[in-house]
Length: 406
Image 1 (cartoon, one colour):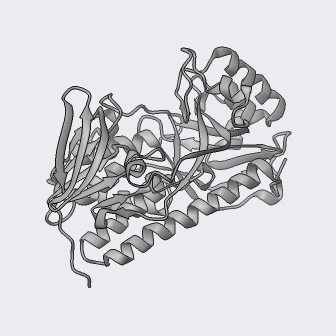
Image 2 (image 1 turned 90 degrees about the horizontal axis):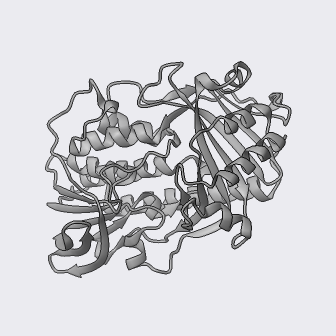
């Protein structure tokens, strides 16, 4: 068995799922360090975009081991299937494979509750435990990272307190695909747009027609045609997995050439602001959304076209690539994890799994169950393998021909 590694003070940059998972792992150690989370968003809560999450094995293992919610947090999809343009199921596509579907907001609120005690309707009736809490600060932008004999010195600006500096034993960069930590320490790794976007949205399952509910209920459903993929599945709504209270979550990939007038129009919001990665909920120009719904009625199977037309709050995410060939810096005092290390295309359905995998591996290392070299090798292998797979899946989806194209 390896010798356990102990830290007294840890800073985590990024307060979304990856940062919260790593914080909870640290707080669950026999001798937990003090944990400070620096989140760039100025609001007390990260905005819920209504996004669905495929709860892979790593995510389920992490929540069972560390979060321990004591109740169901995912919906079981009993099969995968592909549709024809008519809406009929392609018989040979049916795969009786179970997968677990959940929502970003449910995972986020459960993690915030365990990490720093945030109360919300999502955790009603759940029991807290005696693990220590992290400090969670919003409105923090890291501006400098320096190696020192005592650790790693981090400087950031706070929305209310101005410039702040402290020294930690360990700095974890969990700040996403556009990671500031990565940019400061490895500026040659940049996030790059890959030529298509994901339109996203949700619809209450009760608002779908009987035929659409029959197609989508507890079935992971896809449709492919040239340069287009759409998929959908049921997810919890406000923490509940009860039938009749769930949401149908869909993602629709469309190609937009970089620099094209169409992309510029799409990613410029109702206030005239151009967004690089995410066009938030309720900021899409009405004319752009109406045009997309008309296109949906023409190009998609009727069940998916219906779901798109009944979506009240769509948003758009530009699809990007980024991957670093190293996960540690400054002699191991700084780590990159999750999307900051490698941004997966969403076809993999594995971004949350990567965050969970990295946190689980860190827990094994810090408890002495494995060595530092094994930890580094594991997170890098997962990152590079799944990132490469995502590129292959995306290129086939948007620029090739899928075997079940309808």
